[in-house]
Image 1 (cartoon, rainbow, N blue to C red):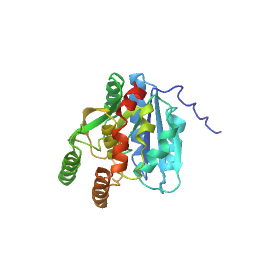
Image 2: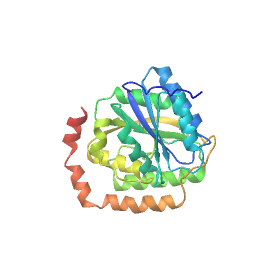
Image 3: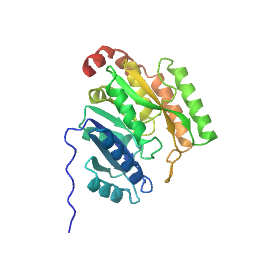
Image 4: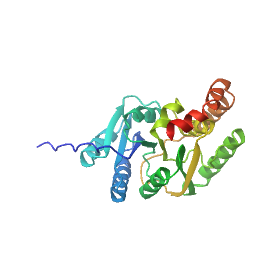
Length: 258
């Protein structure tokens, strides 16, 4: 007998995209915690889980989760093109007035994700709400790399209101998403959001959280990622065309998301 698939959440309050690349070991834990936390808080939650070209059992695990939880919507990228590509694939499926992105690693407690959403909806728009990984357990070398990276970004863009550019989840009004014109298919997507929100005059709301070690699975961030960031940082900073375009539109952002 085939189990019936539960209906999707009607008119969700918040939709979050979660790219999952070879995350069979951790994704069930992360999804279950998120769905339970939002349900307990009384918020209608939608999780767009993107099988981002996985070669392990991630697709099968996500199918099982979508049958257990009405909040979970699954989709698939056939060939992995990077973290950002998975996010860009999932964003058009989001139906809620608030949308966000989150990794599948479960390093930020689900209860903190709920707190972030509640802080975002109680703030005056336009606002970009994100976590700041104030307490991290991912090792000394990772902390040194992260600190150096964030200092370098702040040197290039002193006005950006964050000391943890890649802190995720990130939440924003859905009306803001098309204005950002996101393009990054790799790890630079988080920073692209921060930079473009800065030029649009969007206020950043940052919530301090405890960032845990992965319970299982493997991080997909590699040493080569640092060179990718550096190359694209310089390209972003000194590309006159898109910088002038975004500098001319802060008033539009205020009007559209209010």
